[in-house]
Image (cartoon, rainbow, N blue to C red; front, side):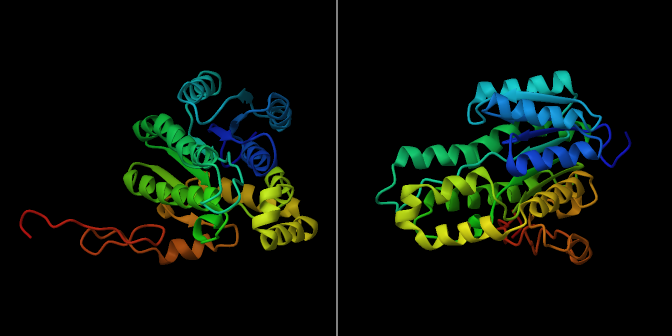
Length: 288
């Protein structure tokens, strides 16, 4: 089959359902071979079968994305079976814990940070050297508007996603000029396993009743399939290389990427504008 991503190898975490599944199918429809990773064997095997039905190769892999040995195995198995990873999608996530900092279990909070921050870091650490050596690749970290919010009672998600956005900005700057790009994205609003977990969580109901009602509303009214399709299309666009100049930015499906590309200002070391909107600090040189 011919497509914008023919010959590429994609690796997707959290790929067994929801947005991960949609992204896997979107990339496959454009010709990419896809490794689907999650903790549930049944889910990844089902998605891999759907990927293969689109005429490309697929690899279902079980694994814990927070563990070094599992990440090493996942990447090695993908590259042995499908070829060097050129598209990395870090999609695995959890919604909780819910509640104020004074009440949530610190160990549960830390487990959330492992999934949102440590896991993407581990995968980027694993695939970036090969991408940079080949001068080709894209990494998409699935973040959230939660990373831009200050929502009391949501310390795991807000901190984790904010860190993921900043990690993507930093990585995007580090790979500038190498042919590799790193993005963070808001996938959209859809009825997923994470939304079910949120509205059914007793702590979410207790501490965040307003948020639970909002989530219930869009679960009942949102066009989930349309949201999945928009997210998948955005990931295909970003993986294609067309928007590599936006590397480091946080993006949403509703953003006009062509306009952003046209209005993008070049990096200036003396008057820096960090991709993604944050300002960097330039230390004085020896002659300053």
